[in-house]
Image 1: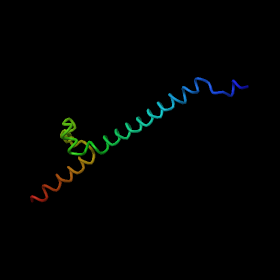
Image 2: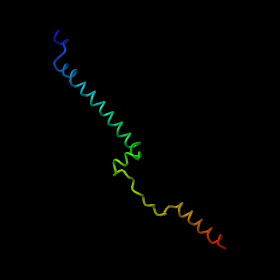
Image 3: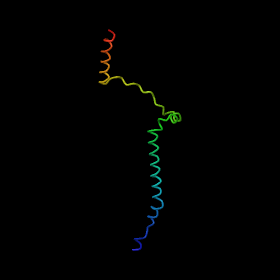
Image 4: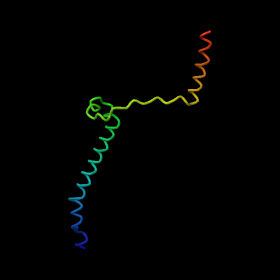
Length: 87
């Protein structure tokens, strides 16, 4: 009975080594996740950070060609207004 109630060698290893290492790894992962979220959501838009990391500059986007239904509709309205206003 005494041998079953005593703490084994592996229990000491888990208690003294494994649990603190897992706790440190967990906290490190939380800090890393917080940094990634802050970087993606906030820090990328700060001009000072953009100057430090010159590769973060946003490249100018080319406008998309008007091919949708709404753009064709508004273009047809505009083309209808042009001849009537010039007359």
